[in-house]
Length: 56
Image (cartoon, rainbow, N blue to C red; front, side, top):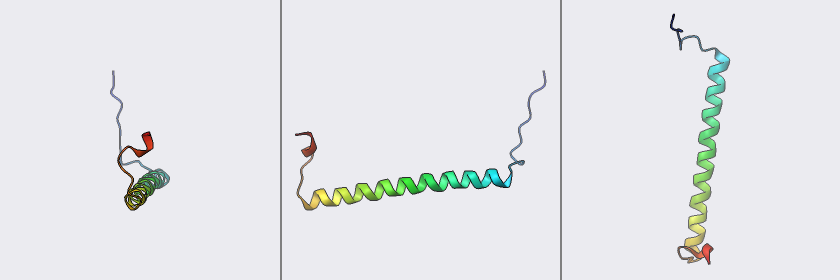
């Protein structure tokens, strides 16, 4: 049996651009999530909301 040969040098420009776009979108979503979490933490601190207040 012959083993299939894999090559990473044959990436097309379109493939590289789509990979970069996916990574860029992933990091954008992560940053938006962290900004939202920081904003909500600031709001809850300013309102003096205790831990677990949403569970009541």
